[in-house]
Picture (spheres, rainbow, N blue to C red):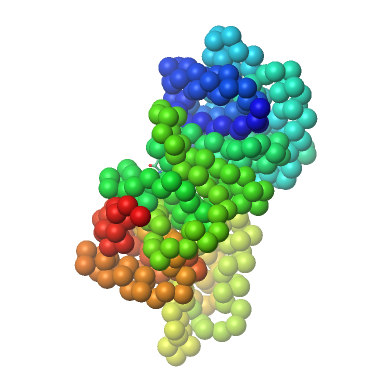
Length: 406
Ligand code: ADP
Ligand code: ASP
Ligand code: MG
């Protein structure tokens, strides 16, 4: 008998029939003699719908109220799933994140799990129950409900798997695993049988939303094997694991893309010590996540500074940058919300300059202008026009021969 944590995403529980389908899959896992803890996302695009409703009521929803509102999406799906299992004759109980002991800080909309008190989940398992936990949410010391960031149910699942010492965390979704690129953009993308935490973390952090980056981080930290597979078929899926040398191939493993990119340029900045701190410290204090940063070489001690943020944070970032611009004596600041990101990722790229050259050539052959470049040891990212992202992903997929079986 093993303890298995399964997570089902929004598309997998989008309507009553799909909830019944998921219930059957859970029942089959239980029938094999396993203890089962299930994490669910909100049905279909319910989180988007709730968010839209909030913005129809007010331009600036209160952080606390918004998190409590969004958390209800997962409460709906978890209760319905428990009912579907009961209907099939299985003992099941649904728990909110708070009831499941998921304790977070108070950073609404991007709360971090501080600890999990698993007693209630364990006692329900001991009674023979299948435990269904509402994903994406937790509770603060002050008993307020928080959410973990969009896509955060994956993180609930891996965190629970770690705290319960589960044998495996299975992430069931609407694709058959992790692909060499988003199959919705690159139809020739191939499913990977396995991928290292390191590569998956870069893929997820740079836009491959099939996994929440923090879930991958937790998996690596607590040595939890994560299986990504389809809720609709029985095909084997992709195993995310800590495998060593077998990963190091002289090859790009995947292409990630992200359409949620906006660019801010501060123009005519005096080039002197303290300027970067003057801009980025207030942005950090305002909880704005700055991604790629580029500063041009200065001419006559005047330079330009460009950085990217998520589109949803552009207005907030511009409001912070405005007054700073004045105080540091910058000429002006401008933004462009129509940006995108494409990245090539693979541990086999380390210390090999050939990959960058090939990437830039492939983009230039398509007439795609690269606006900013950022790199890590196992990733190269180009910021480009949003409208060219699909072409870029397909061109890079071809250039690195990812459609060819290894
Ligand atoms: P869920 O609701 O199950 O959490 P998500 O929509 O969050 O599902 O994630 C699954 C989606 O991630 C897929 O439908 C696919 O379009 C997208 N995706 C992006 N990059 C990849 C990739 N490299 N491999 C697989 N899916 C990807
Ligand atoms: N329902 C939440 C979202 O749409 C969390 C999740 O699906 O993982 O972001
Ligand atoms: Mg998801």
